[in-house]
Each structure stands twice: as C-alpha cells, then as structure tokens.
Length: 311
Image (cartoon, rainbow, N blue to C red; front, side, top):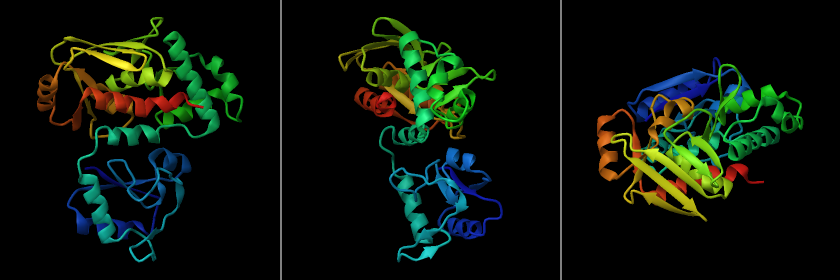
C-alpha cells in the first residue's frame, strides 16, 4: 500500500495528519508539495492536506474532486471541523483500502481520473479517438483545430492538458503517441476494426474495450508473453469468442506509479490459461495484480472505454 500526503508549502495542518497516520500504521508515508492548481487537479489534491492511498483519496466521495491549493478541512465523527481526519477515520480508511479489490477496481479509478472534464478537451480527445477508429492513426494537430477553436486555448495547449491528465501521451516532438486505448506504435495487441481498419491497442484491456467504445466488430490478435502462443478474441455483435477457450487476462502495475503507458500497460496481457498466467506472476513478484476471467476482462474493458465517445 502506497501512502502519500499532498500539501501546500508550510501547511499548518500537515503535522497533525502525519502524526495521526503514525498512530495507525507503520507503513512509510511520503509527502509532496503542490503549489499550483494544475498539479493539484492532475494529482487529485482536494485541498491541503490530502491523503492518497494507492493514488486514491478515501475522503472524497462520489468521485468529485474540488481540486486546488486551498486549505482543506475535515469533519470528525461528531461533525466537528478538524484540520485532519481523526485517528479512527484514518484507521477505517486504511482498513477499507487493504481489503481485496474487485477485479479492475483500482484500474477503473485510475483511468476515471484521466477523463477530460473540460468540454473543449473532451471534444479534442474524442476527435483523436475517432481518427484512430477510422484510419488507425492519430490526426495531425491542424485537423484538431476546429474542435480546439471552441475554447480560448491553442490546439497545442489543449493537447498538453490532455497529456498532463494522462488521457493521451505526447512524443517529445509534440505528436500524439498514445490515446488510450490506441497506440501509434506496434504493440503485442493488434486489432482489425470492422474488417477495415488495422490498429494497435496499448494493452489487453484496452483492446477488449474498443469494440464497446466503437460499437463495432473487432478481432484482437495477441500472444501469451510466457509461451508466445497466439491468442485471438473476435467480437461480433457484442459477443466475444476467445481462442484458446481457456485464455485469461492479467492486470497489474508497477507500484512506483506514473502514466499508464509507463507503469501498467506492459503488464495487462492475455495468457492462454490460468496456469501460464500464474507462472508469469510467480516470476514477477514485484508486479501486484489480478488474473481476470474472460467475462471480468470484457466487463472491465467495456466499463473503461464505452463512455469515451458518448455524447
């Protein structure tokens, strides 16, 4: 479990937060200074101090983060305003976080935080995804100008904002390298969309989510990373056929954190069966994760990507 406290410089409420955490856990707690609203929104700091448990704020409800560098106050069990959660509240939060997560719960929270909320950013993001869906490639920046023109920022500024929230990844030259679920460079997960367009997905779950996102038939061609054996998933009219029939998916992430493309996409893979997936997990003890059944993997892909092109 990774514990991190985000705070503004010289936050007077940081010491009580840290003191109470030491009373309830022996786990190391890192701190990070946040001095601007952009970083606060990107990292999910709903005022100072904010505790993140594995990147999730346990004291923000409903998924809504009023992010910013303002002072944050809490309410204890009796309703009193306090500078930090009580010892009992922190203990409850850590206990809840230590329970086994449902399949994909952590990944769902991670990708949900990367969804663009600004209308212009959302319009540009959807234009990028539609370009991949129809051509297999990202659009040129100039092709995104009409969508970006709805706001006051340049196309480049909007793309940078999408990069910062991890909705897309930009190459050093500023061109689009990744727009989850798509990759501009070949990966082990190749797709045929509607028997017309060839594309690459960033990971197994991304590949499974494309059919639901586009409401189109797809064929995924991948490999078992332990044996090299081919694995295909053919989705027709919403029904997926897997070959081999016993194939499963492993989802995991480097506990160090970072953009999805860097720390988890390489660890979300198809395996021919449960045994080969377990073999891989035993040989990679430093990568925490879960083995998903076909139904669990399909449901997760749908949950993550079906909403992206919704009106």
